[in-house]
Amino acid sequence: MISPPRAPEWWHRSDVTVRDLPIGLLCLGGSFMPRFYGTQIGDLPHRPFDALAIVAIALECFPLAVRRRWPVVCLALVSVGFAIDQLRGYHSFAGTALPIALLSVGAHLERHRRTAAVVFSVAYVPLAVALIRLDSGEPPSGFVTFYLAMVLAWGFGAWLRSTRVADAERRSRIAEDTRTAERTRIASELHDVVTHHVTAMVVQAEAARYLTASPDRLDQALTAVSDTGRRAITDLRHLLDLLNPDHGTDARTPSVGRLLTLVERTRRAGQPVEFTEEGTPAESTGSAELVAYRVVQEALTNALKYAHGNRTSVQVRHAEREITVEVSTDGSGSRAGSPGGSGRGLAGLRERVDVLGGDFSAGRQQAGGFVVRARIPAGSPS
Image (tube, rainbow, N blue to C red; front, top):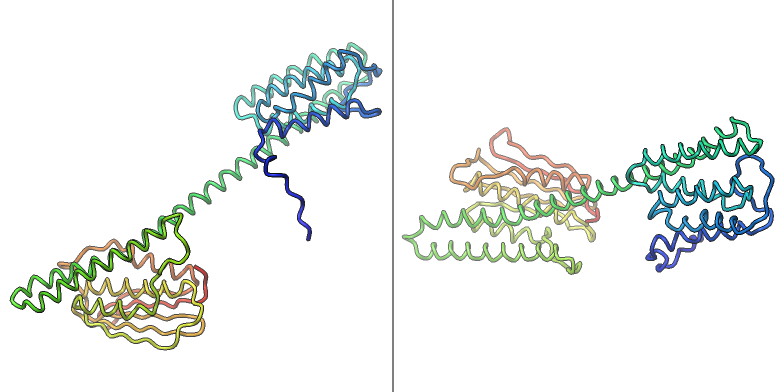
């Protein structure tokens, strides 16, 4: 299928007056073509063009260049030229400019729209009376029909304006929704990165207070705090790089292959974790790897915060078209002495999994403890 030719770029960058001028020139050229007649009221005898005809044609054609910039000025000048054209019996093709000017006012006039409509309607009455006195042969119904036709042109322009406004509002809402979704995504990423690392550091620092009598174990605890802090800085740097408009597409993102490292850091923070990984990751998993990593990260963070020291089990299963994650923690857990939570983490995980068409659940087990389960379809784009 052959696409229609596109206008040159310079034409789109040109002033709106330059882009509207060809319409006026077209009406001007048509006015001097034989047997080209424009809008006409009545049946007055045709009069040959004279100097006044040139003035009337100029008043009708050239103001069309400002029909979008100054629509009321355009309509006023065109109306004067049209009145001269009809009263003198020139009946030039330039009379076509009147419905164009009316449409432009309806489409582009922003303020005093009702006032302009009333003034135009009142100005039409003297013209109709003058044509009746000149015995134009037009019955009263003809003047009413002509007026309604002009109102229709105005109404069509008003419809175009309302459509344009509605489309602009729709685009504005889409842009705002996009910004909101992006802010939510960034907040979720920051929550995942900061909460996990800071929670681990707090737990490790609290444990270090009780190891003053054991210098070796105290040194290991403080080393773990330092390592966790460095890791937090690295992850934050990567996240901030993604927010940089000049950043490329080669950013490192967490993957299922780094789950063992995540589990080891959690173990060093004092949480006993059993890790099981089954199957082979698919060649193309899309966003599934990142989401699976975040599910495990959030579940381990909650285990550190609310069930520190209780056995935790992490099971990851790779299938051809999905990744299944289950993280369970024994015991009831306690919030005493632990960092508070906002509930953003699990809600954000549910949204991520839902976007990919998967299933997510989190709740207490019948035998006690807490379990997080997620089924994440693989292959979905980021």
